[in-house]
Image (tube, rainbow, N blue to C red; front, side, top):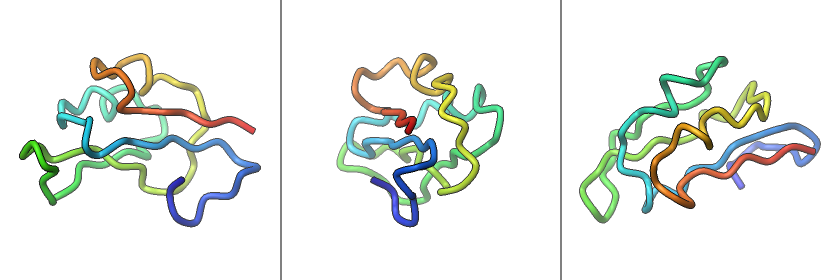
Length: 76
């Protein structure tokens, strides 16, 4: 779970090792709560990450992501 995320509000989580940094999740997020890391993962991609605020739990990022298991969305 991302830091500073309460369990009573929606949030999303990116598995940084599975993410290939395609940025499709960024393109569809209506709240712009996803960013790209400056650090590389073990496969030398810049993975996406949740910025920690204002996620609505809509799931658009989950459905846009081509990498199975890279994004999870949690709604209370």
